[in-house]
Image 1: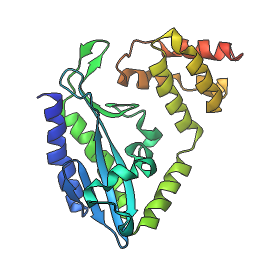
Image 2: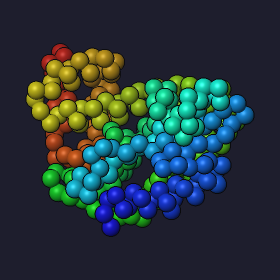
Image 3: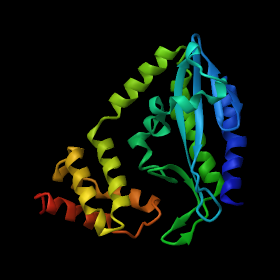
Image 4: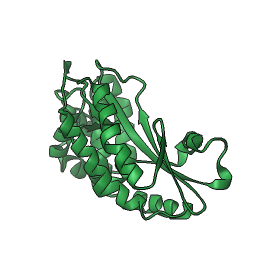
Length: 238
């Protein structure tokens, strides 16, 4: 089964039934649910580069709008909510960075690893997304009955996720992307300085970095050595 076919299968067989049971209506890749004073939205965002050759990358955006703020059709409101939405990572442990079949862009089906096309079992990705929605996402969304409740949930998630552990996993994911070229060192140095992480914290979980690297397109890239160069150039070398 091709990557796009796997994605379409999980949407039809997993997401559509789950969200319908939770009270959502659907059109294309948008789901919405009527609240007391507005609407709750779930938008499935697909990468424009999805194909059988590159695999499928996709994620989910969650937002809410007051009824009076709907600009045109309800199902198009997600377009105007993109700056105020939250992604599925906000609901997941470690922002989802340590989950299988995920990278900095969200979920990924198949695609390349070190230049070799992979083949993620359909059951694996379906089980993963079912669990993420059933256990971590929908229980929170089902408590939302008005727009203010969603805003409070978003605030609580953002506050609760502002931990050193989550900052660290995001840091590793960024460094894994940047380590592909020495020319990215200036950007990496600036990112490190802005992260607020100490050298001790950065070195504390290279086992997490290994997981993130394994989930990336280039698992063999030596992100740990790249990070050590960054630390050295910031005066934090061993």
